[in-house]
Length: 464
Image (tube, rainbow, N blue to C red; front, side, top):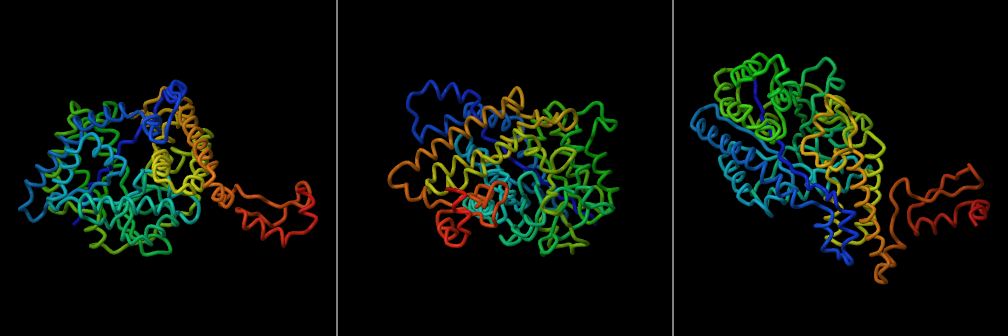
């Protein structure tokens, strides 16, 4: 028996305000409360959410509910799983609460599993060694699932399937029993993605996305140049039936069903008929991720060194979709640089703004990759070019940083500013002469005072 695991990622970013600079100059006085509406284009964000709901979310949810009900009394049921970002849920709560009710109705069937993920769809799992910001965002999402659905997910899906050994260790420490990531050929080598594995140096189970079968639906379904077009549910089910392994993970953006591929392409009818066509094969069975990891023992180990992080993005399946060029890296480093400043303020409004600025989509829009995978970067991209995306984002980040620094000038925060701890890479290194650093690098006033008692007098004189 081969288990089929059908998983959907549901996310809509809060797109930035392309007219931020002009709006900033036209408003003489801006308060902290104004920043959310100033930084984000919420008219556009509402429009995109409502359009996607009409073309994708509502009709796809209705189809899934219909098919779950159809097989509810059968021995082999139809089951799916969702990863839903906190950013998406916030937008639904603000503009479209009935959409959340639709997902809640699906969950109440007992045939739908929800996964945990970073609340803000961020790259926080790549920040530093301790990953404290990543942990905070994961715990926020866990609390969100508990409050909305009275459910605590046991399987984790990182933003864009980002994965390495260190991330796996952190996820295991948070109590999850499995993580989803990409079945990358350079990691698997001769092995198949269609088995349960475990992470290196821990007991976390690893489910691997079958990218070929997933992308047949996600990217190629409506491509007339594809030699398998048109793709019907019975043909696709036959491919699954001929694929050996314990489990086949089919994982894609939920927007595939009506937004990436418009309803006129036949994508909704494909989804409607897929459950039945799969169950016509006696050795195929729909399963949720939790059921799969409870059922199967790992057949091997997945080893991904921290500097070889994998993802599900583009042909490279690495981090280059977000931090592959100098514009992206500049903004990414600025985001990380802001962490101790923002958290030092202990102001929930500023922390929330900073976390919304961490959404991976802001960096993704700056990609300068060419044809092929580059075409994917145009989905819902509100900018005319990667350079425009960079200019808008960097201006907003600079404005945000200036406001944070201005807050620290308040008398009651002066001590916090003096006692703040600098991030790694931003510390002060003692030198004895030009091009001759000592082993002393300090990151706070306390460490600086301690170092003054221990470094050589020659070094102190050099800096005077």
